[in-house]
Every structure is written in structure tokens, then in C-alpha cells.
Image (cartoon, rainbow, N blue to C red; front, side, top):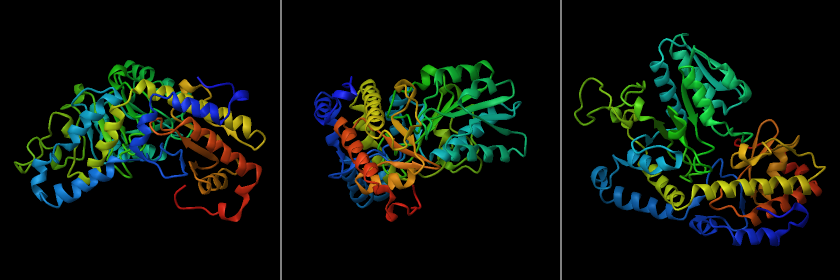
Amino acid sequence: MTPDTATLDRAACEAMDRADPLAPLRDRFHLPEGMIYLDGNSLGAMPKGAAARAHEVVTREWGTDLIKSWNSAGWFDLPVRLGDKLAPLVGAAPGEVVICDSTSQNLFKVLSAAVALRPDRSVLILEGSNFPTNNYIAEGVAAATGGRVSVRLCEKDEIAGAIDADTIAVAITHVHYKSGHVHDMAAITARAHEAGALAIWDLCHSAGAMPVDLGGAGADFAVGCTYKYLNGGPGSPAFLFAAKRHQGQALQPVTGWWGHAAPFAFEPGYRPQHDIRQFLIGTQPIVSMALVETGLDIHLAADMGAIRAKSMALTDLFIRLVEARCAGHGFTLASPRDAAARGSQVSFAHAEGYPVMRALIAAGVIGDFRAPDTVRFGFTPLYTGYADVWDAVDRLVSIMDGGIWKLPEHQVRDAVT
């Protein structure tokens, strides 16, 4: 619980930090002095153990042991071993998750598998305002069928009603990348199954930030990244979930040798593995993948219920402070006000959102901007404190009151926003 806004000050935020059961985990991350990092929903902070792990992989496993490390360091089994480690964070069973490739590649695999599992159906349903790459990938899957399959784009309130007897699968991002709206995974999955369709979930903005129960919801497939709330590092490999009932039945089209039933038999024809390994393609980026484990280990030392409770409290606090202290400066809440309906992020719409965010970043508060007018802030409970929220809003107030965002240097567009 946070105090009433009228009585809230930095001392109250510091008191909440002292009472926070997750506060000790902050020390396990490298956080630059003076920076308030509120962009964990794009790239998580670096675990302090990552540098040592990278040094070990590069100097000993690669530098000294060389090719022996495929066996001696367990490189070949790393995608499945780390998948099993991640599985409890998303409500999956051992043998249902593999870490590999990118989220986009994995989405292509599972959408294609869904098309193969429902050959008498022709429609894939996605959310129109979703992160665009998901819809692009679906368009590519549909195009590969020569026109047999089409993509239908719906908005959140239309999805359940759009599912019918011609639906192959509904493929939805659990937490919307821009607004932070949380979809009801169990209800949408149940509606899909009622119609004989499959349910595919993108967990990029929920894995590691809130409880996810793929098994309890009965989900068929899921994908997600490890570089946001799971703190795996820039471009770290993604993950793929396939319910055991589909393993050996669902055929994915990118049939590389790591997914072969006997990869070192070097047979002329392809035979898929009949377990989660069938979703592997080829040699994985071992150095990057090894770093994923440092982030997973920190998560496994925390309670997901405590993570979610703090996430809701941090985002509630931020909304209250921005609306109270920046009133009249043109910010409109673009995320659900109800914390239970919101992921671990807060978005505000502002007509000058881009220069406002540029000015904030220059002041040491790191968030991001999403066109056309959204300033977005991600709150990672493992390392974000309540005093950070107070200080971030303090700097925002100075920027708005002083018109600092109007300075010419804040009008320049970077390639990455």
C-alpha cells in the first residue's frame, strides 16, 4: 500500500523501499550512478554476474576448451536446459520450453505448425494494434500458403467474438506493447478451444514481470524474448513453448539439423525429434545464450507474487504522481488505470511525446517513445525502487515546468526511439 498522494513525499517512498522484500535483489544488477532506468520493458539491466559468465564462456569454454565444450560445457543441451529453468516462470512443465532463435522466428514456427494442425481452416486472428512484427510474420505465414490462409486483425474487445469455425489460431500478445493492457489468457484460450481453434501467446511483455500460467490456461504455443524483464542481454535468444500434447504432432517448416531426431547421424532426409527439440533449427548463439542464465537465476530467487505486487504498486505510484504533479502539462493516461488490467509499464500520450522523452533521457531518466505520441515507462520490480519513481517524476516536473523539452537538441530524431 502507498500513502495518499496528499501526504506522499520522498521520505515515504524511501520507507517503502526499506520495507520491500525484493529490495536486496537490486544489488545483483549493474545500475549506472545517477540514472533512473525505466525501460526494462525494452532492455533489462545487466546482472552483475553476466560479465563474469561471459568471461568464462569466452576465455575458458571457447578459448581453452574449444570444440570440446559442446560436450564438456553442455553447449549442445543449453537450449533445453535453460528452457526447463525458464519454464516455471511461465507456468510450463519440464520439456515444454526451449530457448532459441528470435521471437519473430519462433512465432513463424508456431503459426506454421498451427496451420498444419488445422488444414481445414483458413483464418489467423491477431490484434491489429499489436507490435507490428507479429502481424508481419502472420502475413508471411499466410502468403506461404498461396492464399489458402488469411490474417484477420481485431482489437481487444473484438477478439473473442471473431473466433469461429474457420479460425486456425488466435495469436495474441499477453501484455500489449504500447498500452500495457493485459489480456485474459484463460478466457481467450478457452474461447479458442471451444471453437476448435488453437491459442498462441506472445509473452514478451509479461514473462518475468507477472505470473503467467500457460499450463493452467491450456495454451497451445507461446513465444517470448529474454532481453526485457528476464534481463538476458541485448538480442539474447528468445523462447518457445509447445504443450506436450502437440510435440511430435505439430510440424514446423524450418527443418534444420538441430531439430532432427538424430542430428549426428547426418542422414540424407529429415526426421523430426518428437519432443521440444523439434522446434530447434541450427547452431545457437552460445555466448549470448549462456548470459540468459544469469538473469533467470535472479528471477528464480524471487517470488513471482511479490514481483507482481510490487509492479502494481510502482505503476500505481507513478500514475498518481504524474497526474498530481504534472497536471496541466498535457499528459493523458494511455494505460489501464486498474493495476490488475495493466502489465509492468505505464504509457502516457502527449502531443510532444518525442522531445519530452528526449529531455527526460538527457536528465537521466530512461524510458522510450512509441509513435505517434506515447511516452512509455517500464518498471522492473527486481531493481526499480519507489524512490526511483519519485525522483523520475521530480525530473519530469522540472522538464515540463521549465519548458526544457522545447530546446532544439530535443527535437532531433534518433534512429531508435
